[in-house]
Image (tube, rainbow, N blue to C red; front, side, top):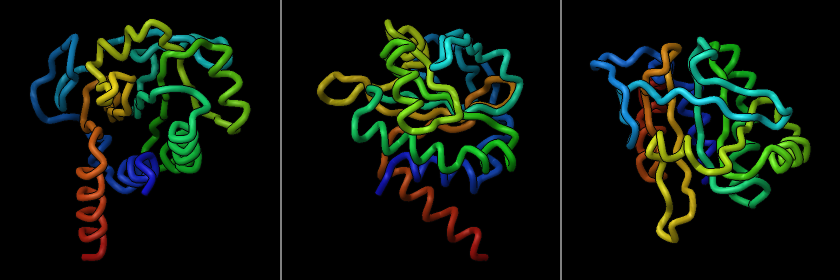
Length: 177
C-alpha cells in the first residue's frame, strides 16, 4: 500500500486534520509534535521562487522525503498530485514536499511528474533538522508528514505506515456510520 496515498486520503477525509490544535502552542527546534508551532522557513522551489512557511496563511501539509526521482519518492509525489485539487478545494490547504536536493533537481522532478505544488530544496537539511524529521535505519533522510493549521501549529504527524493504516481504517468506519 502506498504511504503517500494513505497520507493524502487521511488529509482529504478528515477535516479535523486541518483544525487548529487545541493544546498550548510553543516553538521547538527539534521533534515537532502536535500542538507545537512549526519552525518558520524559507526555501527555493522548483520554479526558483522562495516559499516561506509563515507567508502561507492557510493549512499546510509539509512532507519530507529522501530524494527526487527515486521510486518511492515518485510514488509519494504522484499520490499527493492526485489529491492536490481536493486538498486545496475542500480544506483550503496546500502541500509542500521537502528534500535535500537542489532546485535544478526539483525542477526536473516536478516536470517529469507534472507536479503543480511546490517541492522545496533543503540542500543542507536545515529545515529537516529544525522539524526533527526522521531518518530511516540506514541514516538516510526518512519520510514524515506534518499537517499544519493556518497559524503553523502542528495538528498531525504521520511517520509510521502501520499507524497510518490503523487511522485510515478508523476513518472509514466512522464515515460508514
